Length: 116
Image 1 (cartoon, rainbow, N blue to C red):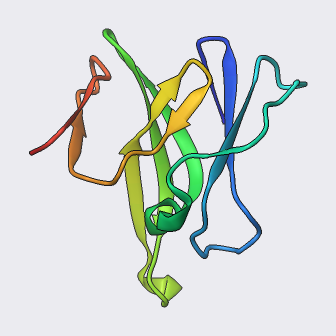
Image 2: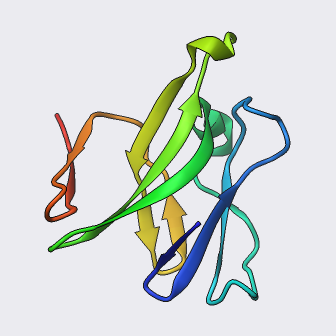
């Protein structure tokens, strides 16, 4: 869960253990609610790009605030799991996880950018 510009954003998913499924988010102006309905953070068919959310990390810099989606992404063998860290598109009650690609973040300004 993160608090950003007056809203709480929470990410969750179905009860499938570490198996990837469509992760969802809800928002609320206060922890006590009222909470919005849960909505998908990525197209359901991609099962959150094969990942299962673990947390969100808010990076506050001198120029921007970036929220990073942090997840475990693994093959059949859980001992060979990988991690997926991606900047979220978040704000104004919306939260989207873009398709994974290379990116970087300036830890001073907190601006993230896609690598080509």
